Structures are given as C-alpha cells and as structure tokens.
Length: 388
Image (cartoon, rainbow, N blue to C red; front, side, top):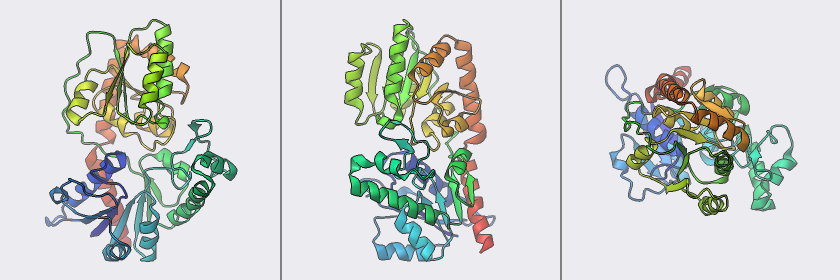
C-alpha cells in the first residue's frame, strides 16, 4: 500500500508532532506482510528544510518542500494519505484527487482559530467560543495579530472544519478530543512511546525535594502559575528546589519574577538539554509539574515522565486527565493556590509519591506503547484498503 504522510513540520525541527510523525512513519515502513514484503510503502512530505539531517538513514522516502505540481503527483500516486494536522493544500488536493485521507489532529485548528484552545485576552483555557457561535470573541482573541490576520484565521477555521468532515477518518490521541471536535468517522489512537528505553536509576537529591518542570517557556505552558505556587510554598517554609528544564521567550521575564519574589535561591534554569543530560536531571526529580493552560491534545511530557516512573501533578485539562487516569494527580487549571495545596500534601507523603510513580510507569506500559500506536494506525489503513 502506497502511503503518503504529510507533516508540515518534521526533523530536524523538534517538537511533539515531529516526534510522533517520525515514530509513526518509521513503524509503518518497518511493518511486514505475512510473506515478508513491506506492508506499507511510505513517503513522507514536509515543508521543513533538511539542514544537516540525514534523510537517507530513514526506512522511508522523504520529500522536502515540494512544489504544487510535485505535491499533486505524489497525492495522485498514493493509495491513502495521512495528514498530521489539517494543512489546507494537501487536505484540499487529497480530497480533490478522491484519495482516502486520514487526518490526525495534533491541535485544535478545526474548532479554534489560533489552534491552541486558549483565550488570549484573559490568559485562560477557551470555553469553546467558535463552536458556540461566539465569533466576536474569536476575533477579539486574535486581535493582537491585526484585524486582517485575525479575520483570516477565523475564516480558515470554517474551511478546515468543512474539509475535515469529508475525510475517511479523523484520528485524535485521546477520546476527550473526539468529543470536543465533534467530527464524523473519528476515533482515538493514543500516542506511542518507546517503552524499551532504559532510564538512569532514580537518584533523589540529599537536599530538599525537587519539583521539576519540563517544556517550552511560553505563556500557555503555565510556568507563572507554578512560580506563584512556589511562592506560596515558600511562605509556608516548606523546603523544595525548583528545576526549570527548557527554554523559550518567557525565560527572561521568569528569571526577573524569581528575583522579585525572592525565589532565586530555590530556582535553577537548565535551558534545553540533550537527551542524556535530560534523563540525568530528571532522575533527581521528586515530582513533575505540568501546569499548562491550553494547547494540549495529549501531553507527551506527561506520558514520558510517567514512563520514567515519576509522579506527575498536572493541570486539569481534558487530555491530561485522560492520559494520567488513576496514576497521577491534577489541580484546577490556572489555580496556583490549588497547585500549592496539592503539591504540599504530596511532598509530605513519600509513600504516596512512590506509589504514584509505580502506577504511572505501569499505565504507560499498558496503554501507550509504540507498537500499539503503529498497529492501530495500520488497522485504519487496512480498513480503508478493504473498503475500496
């Protein structure tokens, strides 16, 4: 089966979409039919330049930045098309070519003009203005980009939603998102992790417990909420250290905030770390906090740290609640006082921390394995092939 996978972003770009797309394309390309032949002939198309990345080391063909005619030829030659997000040119052309299109949603672009499901004016999770018909609020949310740009995003949301209703299958990483998007022929296939990875042995520090944050330093990740909770814990004279792993445009303002709130002795900014260093730093963590305010459709950072056997305390976004199950804890999204209260209780209960860490790893091994994700996607394409 000739399968064209389209992902606007791909390696060497780094991010959750790129990670999942690479794993999916590799896994499908390595699947074998009963006779030993490759079951899927995978071609991956992307707009990301190669840079120094070695495409030849991959078990599938990569075509970067194709022109319109080349993209059209590739779509016409495919038996099925997999889109990592509702990118309009391949979505429209794939349907025009009457190819079965499988659309995997890595964001909220079919129900939210900015794709984040985050209301910028109040810095809060969106309550669903677009789907409720409160379009003036959508335009207000994106007004910082200018009236023309904001109106364009709003209009394109209608078009994306119209086209997404006509694909062969809509895939989301959690069931919560299936209900939120309200699209036909939808199903949830959880993202997969490499559960064979070996992590360094946990090394709790000899000093105070370590609260870890891992992610981009941007507004939607909710780091300020974590800092507010840390200030409350400090006022309670609770011992802790706060490790911030990652980088982004908010770093200078967060460093200033740490100084203003006298948190500097407790806070350490690590910046972006290579994999080996990241594992070593997280091996010292007592608990991982994921305080995102919006923009999360799964939460790879949640699942990855669960796989490490780390207790996770996350904001109560629907995706996080589903991924954590009964193997982690949540707090009210954006509520620093609730985060501080739950965090203080955790840090005072070593037995509960150990129990959550063990449950977290078991849950990932049971539900979020890479082979499970690959096989579930393969089943979708087989169903499409058999229905043709």
